[in-house]
Length: 232
Image (cartoon, rainbow, N blue to C red; front, side, top):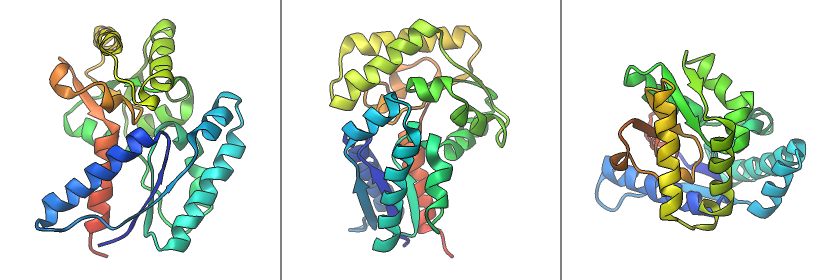
């Protein structure tokens, strides 16, 4: 079994879910008392959030590159960045280490294509929804068409992530708001919707949705298990 190097803390609420899902996945695959071999470097999200909202992405990249290097020194075999938004600096992180980085958008896109979906909605932070780094990863290698909510809805999605979900607050009114935005996306032609922030899974589950939703946290964790157990 390979050792998974997790860069977490963005937020720790979703990092906890990564740890749970990865260990469940290994137990399901191997049975008995098996659990995952992992290392986690968890950052102080207050600092990362400040850098995000001040546009200091280079400094944020330096923080996460240092985390990747510590995981490499600790014996990790590959890197899992436990956040969608900070994949904006995935290239800088990858350049800082000899370890492969398992990009969150790739298993997500593969799951979408497996369902025969080509036009997909995207929810996430404002950075993930509005900037090119994430959408281009879905569009170019995977051939997906990506649509995002209108400006008012994007503001709502972003606010709920930072002001509630990252603080572990799950509010019924916010669930209703997200479900309305999911409906907006399906009316705009989305055949499925990406839950493109690792905290959204704390609020929205497939059983509550009329449209297929793609939980990036679960998909990324599953791909990490597969990579850890793959021979060679």
